[in-house]
Each structure stands twice: as structure tokens, then as C-alpha cells.
Amino acid sequence: FLKDEVANVAYIDYDVNEITFELKAYNVAKKHGDKAVAFLLGHELTHYYEKHSWKSAFAKSNSDLKLGKDLSELQDKVAYETEADYLGGFLAYTAGFGFYKDIGKIIGDLYKEYDFEPELNDYPSLSDRIELSNRSVKKIESLVDVFDAANLLMAIGKDEAAYKYYEYILRDFQSRELYNNIGVLATRNTMALMDKDSLKFKY
Image: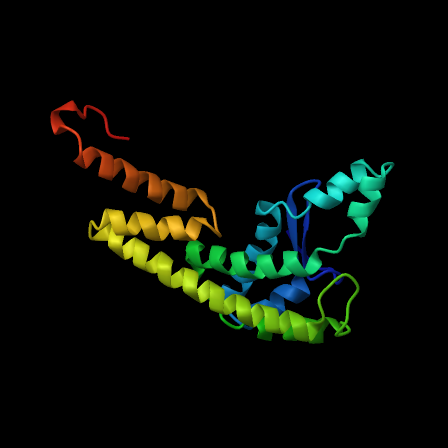
């Protein structure tokens, strides 16, 4: 949902599985192009796909236990935000929006537009956030290279090599599309070993 409110930039409501993108944040992102908008949406989707709400939901439902209280006091924001930048950026790329390399720049622009303090509660500092995002860009770039190579290898029939490339990506990033591609490659490899007359059905 795109809402004309000013509070949280963009966020996911896990209770109803909805992402809200604030109009102010959208306008900042739009200055950087569609890639930046896709990156921010990919970031929020990654929080959902990686189940970043699990600990807080578990702690809340078990707040009467010491374990629940202990879990609620642990701070995982740095890890979650870094992972969302990294995998969210790659998700946006695989969705066809291209590789957005200026994550640190858009984060800085959002802090400035929202007049956020460089140090926010439960979040990494602005300087750390920018440095972590720059490191995420390097990791995304590596995955993008492997992904592009895998697609090209698959297109020219180098199935065994393509399979290994997709398998490498799946260590960090899982999606239906990647599992579909690796499944197609496994099927093609298997079919090459079988008697073609016995292959009555191809899925």
C-alpha cells in the first residue's frame, strides 16, 4: 500500500502480511529510479521471506516465561537490516528491475528527508548502515554475476555447469524461480541418460 503518512518510511505488517510504502519515501526513492523503488520493496519482502518476525512473535506469545522475556530483549535489527539489504537487492534484480548499487545513498537521503537522528534506537547507526549497505552491494554483485552466468549456461545447453551455479546461489537465496530452473536442469540431465522411447511424458 502507498500511504500519505510520515512515520516509518516503509514497513511490513506481519499480522496481515501487508507492506506499506510511505509517499514521502516513495518520492525519495523515485528520484533514484525504478531500481531504487524495487530495492526498497525487495528489502521489506525479504523481512517476510526470511521470517524476521519469528522471534518477536514467539517472545510475545510466551511473554509469561523467562525465555520469552529473554528473547524480547535480544537485538537482531542489525543482522535483519543487513540481510534485507543484501537479499532484497538480489530479489529486485531477479525480478527484472536491474542492479541498484547506490543503497548507501538512498539510505542517507531517506534519513535526511525524514530528519532522522544518525543514531536510532534498535537500529544500526547511519554510518554503520551505509557501510554495511556498501558491503551488501559487493555481495549482491557477486550473486548477480553467478546468476547471469547460470542463465547463459542454461541457454546454451551447458546444464551441468548451470546447475552448479544455481546451486551456489541457493545457499544464500531461495526462490521458486531458482528452484524451477534447477529442477528443469536436473530433469534434462536425467532425460539424457534414459531411453528416449521410454519418455512418454515431459513436465
